[in-house]
Length: 238
Ligand SMILES: CC(C)(COP(=O)(O)OP(=O)(O)OC[C@H]1O[C@@H](n2cnc3c(N)ncnc32)[C@H](O)[C@@H]1OP(=O)(O)O)[C@@H](O)C(=O)NCCC(=O)NCCS
Image (cartoon, rainbow, N blue to C red):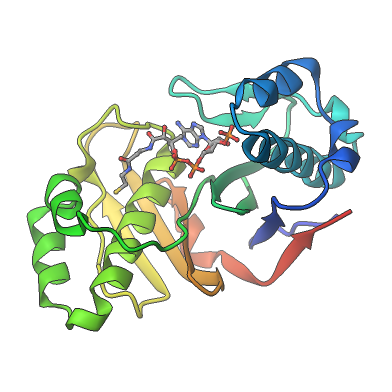
């Protein structure tokens, strides 16, 4: 598999497919992790997701999937352990997982299957900044749920690109809420853990599954703005 330096490639994985072909790709600790899920459906989805992650990354590296080795950042962000400029991030929601792959810059991916949230306002007040809440409140009623998920996935993709989890208050990643935007740039200062120039792409790979992909480059570089999102979304199936 070939990934150019100016490309971000996305893979969509249907987790509700037969897990058996993916099993042979897993390591023992991953099988143990799968077994810890209480529901069989969640066990199988994890096996498919992790196996597909290995298969795709092995393809880029020209390496057998089961021998791909991971390392983990301070807040649990997985990365490739071997000396490579390949970076990835994965998100799952319901029956889907999305994987983003890029070279040399930090990447974060978030997908969220839309469901009706009775406590949408309360969650927004708790999680979004004052400006994000004002923008959400200003949306026509029919756009509020979409706006909520747009804001959520964009912020989460930035959090995942930085790899900081909840170590920082979520106001450092303030984004536009308008759900019709498909690309935005956000500049962040402050601590080196979060600072940088972020480019966000917003898409809906499957109806009802909003997604955001964030790339972070150093503010001194123009890296993220010269990247283009691969228009084709690859599907993983055996
Ligand atoms: C992992 C985390 C970063 C995202 O979790 P999530 O949204 O529940 O789950 P997702 O499916 O999108 O992502 C999980 C994947 O991200 C990756 N991941 C794990 N830790 C990560 C980190 N610190 N940074 C980036 N990616 C991480 C892993 O590949 C993981 O997959 P796995 O469980 O199969 O190993 C979570 O720890 C977190 O802190 N989330 C912030 C939650 C929040 O309140 N967000 C508000 C957004 S407005």
